[in-house]
Image 1 (cartoon, rainbow, N blue to C red):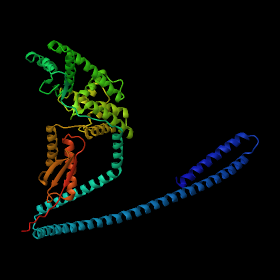
Image 2: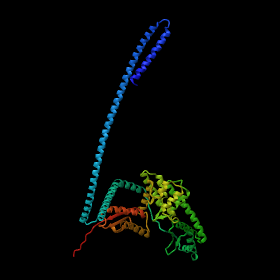
Image 3: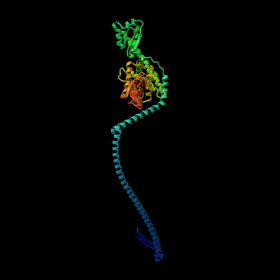
Amino acid sequence: MSIGIILAVAGGSALLTFTLLKFVLKWVNINNIPQDQIEEIAKDILKKRFKEAENEVEEMREREEKRIKQIRNENTEHEEILIEREKKLNKRSKLLDDKSEELENKDKSLKQYSDRLEKDKERLETALEKISGLTKDEARQKLVKEVDEDIINYKAKMIRDAEKKAQEVAEDKAQNILVESMQRIVTDYVGENTTSSIKIEDDKVKGRVIGKEGRNIRAFEKITGVDVIVDESPDTIALSSFDPLRREIAYVALNKLIKDGRIHPGSIEESVRKAKNEISQEIKKNGQILAEEAGWPGIDINLLKLIGKLKYRTSYGQSLMSHTIEVIRIGAVLAAELNADVDLVKKACLLHDVGKVLTHKVDSPHHHISGQIARKYLLDDKLVNAIEAHHLDIEPQSVEAVIVYMADAISGSRPGARKDSYEQYIQRIEGIENAAKEIGGDKLEEVFAIRAGRELRVIVKPNHVSDDEMTVLAKDIVGKIEQTQSYPGNVEVTVIRETRATEIAK
């Protein structure tokens, strides 16, 4: 707002004030105050009012000037800031242009340098090929071979260090636990045969057993499925069968027939029927003994009868009932020492070989059959795994499963526990040797198993295998044997590398 407009408004306002004041005074004092006095009073008031208006206008003018000055100052500052920023931007733009030009120059220089390096590299490669007598591919293959050898050496060193650390801590403790477990569980074992002998008092009994034209012996063999051997052996009749249960039924039945004295096809059938009933009761009694050993009083009756048949089954000549009791006791001690679930371990040890009762009916590994039986009776998954993983072809999922494996291995590998047939022994020895040959290949000079297959000696060609590679080779052979072979106890693999110099003086 300009000063003129302010003064005009103030003048108009004063005139209006004077006119209104004059009118009011005239109306109020119309009879008492003279007209000229009223005008004088109005003029004084107007002057005073005009003076106040001038003062107000002056104050307004000063305020407006100050505000305008402040605005101008602010504009000046903004202009200075903008000018400063523009200078900085110009400076930065110039720096960027300089940097860009510098980078372009460096890029050109690097490209030229790279081209020179590539040429020098090609020249050096050519010179190196001439000096070394090797092409680029041959040198690469040689380098890869050396790197592989370094890796093998490093791997062997890591294996040795890991074995050393593990042995320092674990070997003594493991030995103490195993030795204590084995010492606390002492059982005797006498190998069983595939024949049973019956003593007779008179050779005339042999004639009655054979019967007229051999009808009695044929009827007996047909009903029992057992071979009756009546030869020149004095006072003895032998029963032969690879099925211990059948042989036991035949043994009981023939004893009854001999004591009764009446031997004919009808009495044979009756005697065999009674023998089967007695053996059935014996099976149930055996199952109760095993269940009590495992602390499992509420076991299913059908499962009880199944484990009771373990008495009449053998493995490598070892009684499965004796073996099962031994495994239960060893497993319980190990579980207690390792703070594992003792009850679960004892149940798993009880059922770990129950599949061997059905191996003649089911074409599957016995521990897999044991697992299937456990699932049939709706046992816990953890218990099932501990049962079927005791040969480690199935991954153990708990410490209890590993304990069952250890207990079974201890029972089966202790001296005198088992015996092999000639064919099984040869097959096991050849399998262990062939596993080593498959891993070693042309690197091996000779492989032979000693100590009944408990140790494998591997003699390597010294020019094909280094000292560090020996450690790796031994580990690989052990892994192959564990994956593909079945054997009692442990197999110690010894790799031998030696160089001999032989001359003959003539």
